[in-house]
Amino acid sequence: MDKNFPRDLLLQPVGERINYFKKKSVAHPTLVNSYINLMEKVEVVEEGKVLLVYGPSGVGKTTLFAKVKNEYLQRYHDEMVKDKGLIPVLAIEAFANEDGKFDWINFYTEALEELKDILIDEKRLPLNELGVELPNNPNEKTKRKLRKSLENAIKCRKVKVILIDEAQHLTKVGNSKGLRNHMDSIKSLAAKFNVPIILFGTYELLSFRNLNGQLGRRTMEVHFPRYNSEEQRDIDAFKNVLWFFQKAFPLQQEPNLVDEWKYFYRLTIGCVGTLKDWLDNTYDYIMENNVETKILKIRDFKKFEPTIDQAYIMAKEITSGEKSLTEKRKEKEGKLDALLKLDQLDDIEVKKKNGNKRPGERKSKRDKTGTDL
Image (cartoon, rainbow, N blue to C red; front, side, top):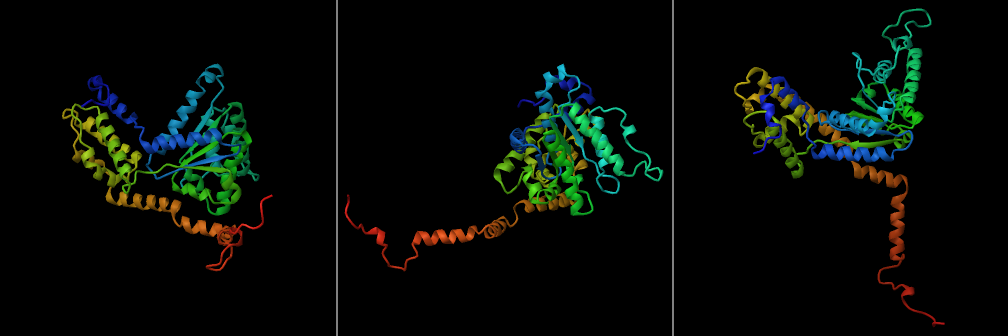
């Protein structure tokens, strides 16, 4: 059967073969559908809109993040050639500090570095009002100064879209007020420059969706799901992913991954990103330590497999997130109808249809009366 890699790659050094496979990605259905869904929404997004792209950890959101970034770079390539100052996409990762809380000063600094701003350290105020050094402490004046600098940089660089990966770290705050403040900051950046901001993260991003009605109105959502073993088409798609990668290994002999799909599915919970990391680590090790065999067997993958405990924790987190999307939907719809009095309208319409008549009573309008003129 045909290999899914250039044949002359087998003659290249080990490092090149490893890098080739690490860069290999597959346009599988959930990735393609999520990308199309996201780009369609971005095209019609209004001023001040924020898009939430959420899904399980390891599903492939970072791949989607890179795909969107590359799309904008290609779209504005000709303009970038003419305008050397143009940076159409600001793509950054949100980090959490050692204490687990999100730090806006670090975020603004990372964003300014991405936009190639200069003298960033000069914008960080080293002293508080008492003259005490605060080199690492989030200082409000420093925060405002850095935010103003970022606003100027976004304007000068003519940024068209802002992408934030690992955005669930934005939810790392002490209370709901802090959560609203974080979302307000993101929303105001989007509105100020009329550019969409896309947050990529885990199901923890769902905490942003129901903060209040105003924020809910200004956000749009894209769900990037895993492959669910309860759906036959998802099982088939997962098998196709395994088939693609087993042919992409630059090896003389193709390994058989598809026949062991349950083994790979069980430990990845149907998440392609987790699967790819696992395959990368295994291939890297084999090529660096056992080049002469040029064979990959299932026992080789066991060296780097996620443990059962890790898989179980991932499965609990993922299914909990999925459940939060669909749980009690009918119950919530019923409460919404009651709040809007739609349930009473249904009763009225039924009565109108029946004409409020007693069983067996004829409707008078059925009998024609009078004469035609």
